[in-house]
Image (cartoon, rainbow, N blue to C red):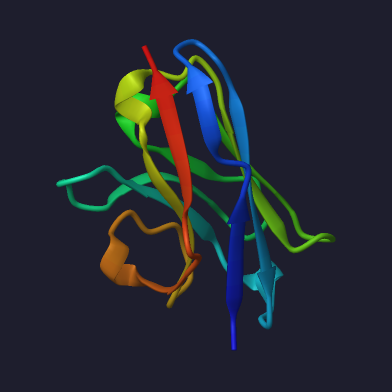
Length: 124
């Protein structure tokens, strides 16, 4: 059974930074891309960033480009999301996810395994 556990969320002022971590166990972590999603109250879950199995390729949702950086450490079975210049509209529960097929995917339906989520709140 694949398990994903996020950590690193919290309350931060606008303009601040947070680093989210996602520890993965129970799978061949290094063979799959990973994704980060977020869901704000009353809104659908949306793609934020994805990273290939090697870490060479990354992909970002437009609103976070230049502010967020996704990375991974395959030796530690962990994927990260560094979030800088945070804005109040970044407030959401953030989830990491593992897809059900190769490649970076941007829709939630293409992901099989999900973490429990970590709350990020950005105050103005």
